[in-house]
Length: 429
Image (cartoon, rainbow, N blue to C red; front, side, top):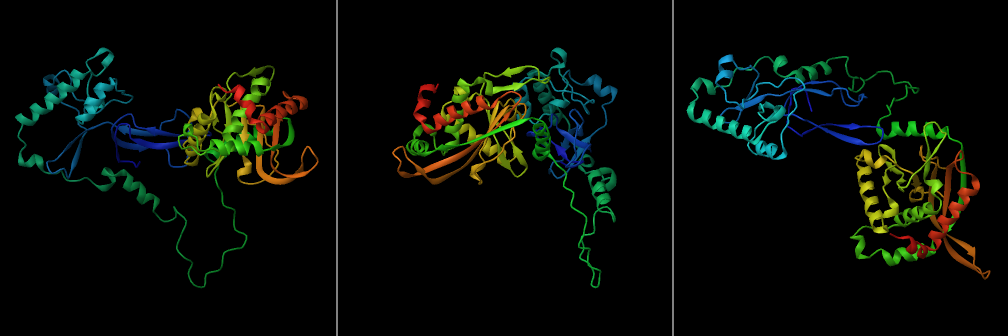
């Protein structure tokens, strides 16, 4: 949006990137943008104004080539003669439209700006009758008033600086000395120093959130534990399930099954699904398994979570995972999707690596990093060497809450569900 441009009701004004999610801000009114309080890239405090919108009534000429914005308030005689449902020339600051969805729909179909209609309902609510009365008033005005030749002429345009403030702003920005000189150096000019100043890249959005979360995580005493999982049974299970119709075309990977296995292990070790309170003097044990999945995006790291995994089947988890991955890829993760996580998974193996030392996503107290599947020789029970498909896992835990023995037992239970996935059938809801 530019200063001086027109915005419609519910039209997108801007996109605000918070520390955890991107939110589209839409206009509550239709009118002209009179002032932009911020520029792209600014850090804006919650509750600060973004734009000033002047709500006006527009009338166009017969050929539709020109539009005149009416800003003159009605004269006393016009107010006295106007119907009950009058049309405002300019809404006062802070004016809010109160109308039912059906009334708004009727107004939208007939191109009526509700912000300019005076409501006669309780507490100024605009009713259907108010909109119909405005339509009747407009029809009566069109029939009874014949425009004179002079009235159809377009008024002479004022100076550029007064009519188009955005153009004046552009001219100011384009003035010499405002922007760096991008013209190529002239012949014979001295070459630039090899030791030029570093490029300053402000931290915004997810990258800024990552700084904050890692500072908090760095203050937590961590305990790490690593193990390896035999993935052969899981690979066979996935091969049998990947074409099942219940998936509705969703590509099934190991991750949804491992998320379900993690939830099953949490049922037997509920302390892992906990967090410390703000004073660190009490433990909050959560009933919902909101399992976060770390996702790398062009804007930085984000950890949305799948809600209530304990009540979901593998197909539901897979579908929700696809939705979150699509939203993260375009930077449109909802605020609700990143709030309330209880345990996290980092699937770093899809990029590369075997082991890691993950840091918990505070206030959570546990996280597991998954390595890549590797085919390595191992001894079978009979002593013979066989080919095994192994995946390394790395746990990170808040040592203030979880001791080594508890984390090891929890890891063993998770490993059991992965290496013997049939046991999950007894725990599916």
